Length: 94
Image 1 (cartoon, one colour):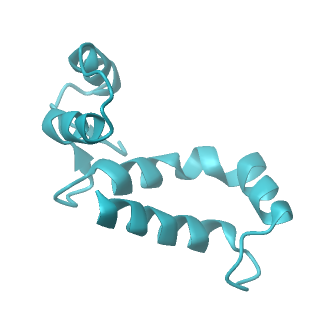
Image 2 (cartoon, helix red, strand yellow):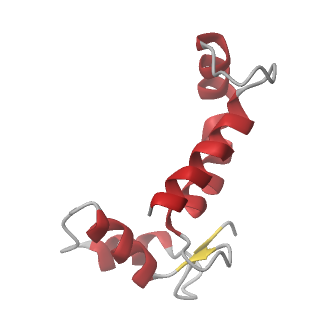
Image 3 (tube, helix red, strand yellow):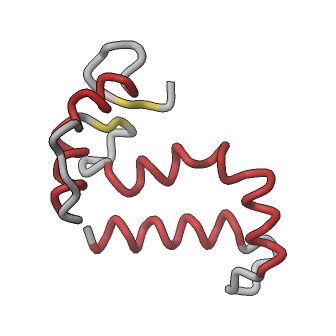
């Protein structure tokens, strides 16, 4: 989980720090929220949860992520099925 968060932080820094000064300034953050974050949410979601880095999230990875943060997994299978639009047992960009 530690490395997942570090990777996510690095990705977020690269995405939002538009002037490359190593800091996320308020104007950069607001621009990202306004124009780019929704589009790039998939990337963040994958980086946080995709344990084997195959660009897909399977139910076991999602459960592990939830359990690591002590989030109730009672309804996770229903939620996963909703996100698995093409019914291939994974959540992917497609």
